[in-house]
Image (cartoon, rainbow, N blue to C red; front, side, top):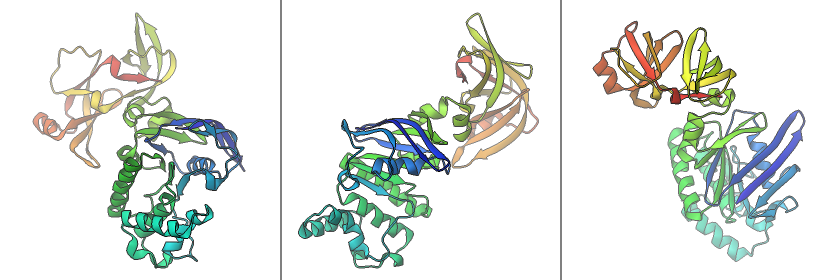
Length: 349
């Protein structure tokens, strides 16, 4: 297990602030945040490239004073960080040489990892003649050849074309599982994060704001920033009061009911997939029901079977419905419509 406890670091005007994380053996952990959030600096602290306050433990051992070459950690940078004066073979060898492996073992390990990554034919090439995908494979080979316990990946897919991204992503999943690694992968891409992560952390301005499974974070963000950053629809502000065991949130005169019993000024979120839409008034157990008009109809990128319908019901409510349901309802702009959602589906923070 990797455990980070109260890690803080100040570099110029930037700070990592009281980072606390736990990553289990065999877990693929993705840290996601915008540019400048502190993702790379956090990885570099784990690798041993910065002095920090706080503690980092690997299997219960504080590695604060353990030299870089003895941490058994592989680090792969977005820009590959290959040595231009060394050929492919010597780049891959580098970590083994500084660890003083015997030459015959070095050659054996380089040969093995080259076969796994299908780069044996590149071993005598100059790294500056390689494509982006080839450079990334060499960078991965250099990190993996030392047989690390922890693999750190700094935006490993960002500089690659879509086809190469898919190839490298498939390989990362495979090697992570086969070697039972602790993998920490940083990115700003949600699709990438969701497709790879066992667990996610959101980082912003040097602070970890939320950790958990991807669906948990997307459905239940704990702050306005996380909700906006994850692209949440139907995020509103209002004033909440609790009466008879139910919260009533006032949004510009519109009353929204919630089972989250927060009071005062609040933000709240209604997931589009949790809203029922109908052309006729329905007798429903849903506490929240509104009549409105359709103001927008659009497709959702990369989700061909889903249609987004925005209903003006005093507040603009985005609803996700299947393409089949959309066609059956024969919905049109300005058409009158009813929307329903349960009080339990209104998440307040």
